[in-house]
Image (cartoon, rainbow, N blue to C red; front, side):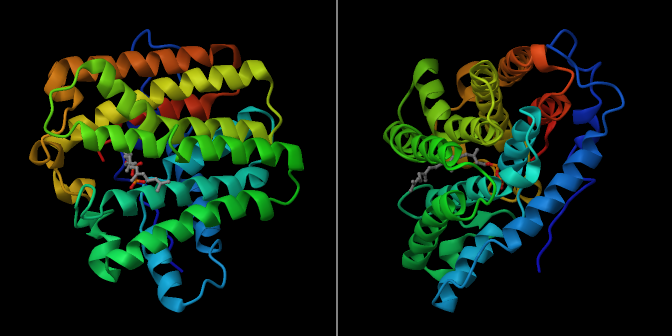
Length: 324
Ligand code: GRG
């Protein structure tokens, strides 16, 4: 069993307790909330659930390539957002775990497909050779397809204890995030814009769809499972917009400031592919300020729930303080 937890190298200490480093940026994470401990425990639970999530896929080669990418580590931010949103809405995290796993499956599928020669053509992901480098292009496409469809199976058929009408809403949200209104649409515009000068509005469109849609689905699905109020769902959508864009800005910044070794994926890729990025359009300093402002907006949306929202507030800070 591969349980990959990296407790110390993630900047988590500053994320959880950085009330002083982002003055005036919405409700702070309460002093005393052990974000590092929270993250480690949630990651461990997610890793165990992921490890047990793949059933008797046949042939064995398909199972192996699905597991290769699904259990390759990663920050597990998406499933943890889902669990945290479920708990904020008053649900038990165990009810949301199959959906949390599904969200990581969709994310992993998108990474496998994104790395393909026809897309970003990358050979390093999560510190390992990309799926198609190990299993070949056809198998990588099929492993992605199998993870995407397995994700819907996790929600529809493997979510005991959750009322069917809530699962239906989750399936709808996951469909919107994965398809043309989400990941696929964002990826298409991203590919079309390569080597072109794009404005901020287009860049925002790309990232709200390519990156933001799945992050939004994470918090919305977690909350739906717990039967959240419309008011909380609306606040979580605002929160997700802020963290989604901030996440991508930081991703763009890390692409130029961090090493491949630390990132676990090829650094400097945006420059090589002549992509428009926030640092290219705004400069590094202004990009960071924008990310901080977006996180502040995200946290402000949860102000009415700040007493119970410590994990989501701290996760928002983690997005701008992360180093990978
Ligand atoms: C086939 C339905 C279907 C969709 C695929 C390929 C594609 C469409 C979309 C690309 C989406 C994509 C790869 C967006 C980038 C999002 C992003 C910044 C990923 C990195 O996320 P992290 O840093 O990665 O959370 P880890 O490895 O930590 O999980």
